[in-house]
Image 1 (cartoon, rainbow, N blue to C red):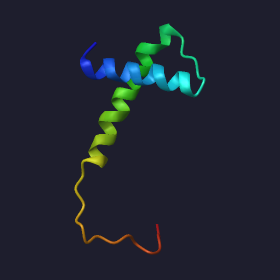
Image 2 (cartoon, helix red, strand yellow):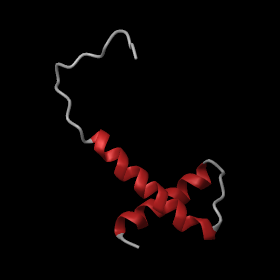
Image 3 (cartoon, one colour):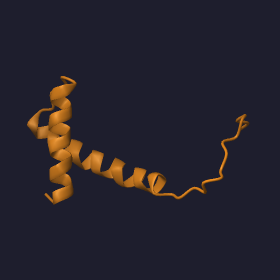
Image 4 (cartoon, one colour):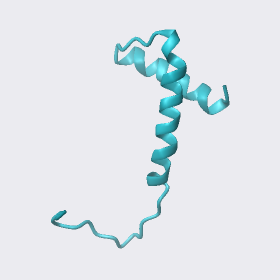
Length: 62
């Protein structure tokens, strides 16, 4: 388990206690793996630079 996964495991354990959502020990590796993948995918969006002068569209039309 690398350092990032160790941090994720600690985060998951603490958060599960706070929200009273027990996670069985046998499921913890899968939960850590899934959160790691979600984090990696989300980084593509969170690291995408947007110009400062960008304005949101007032009306969304698909």
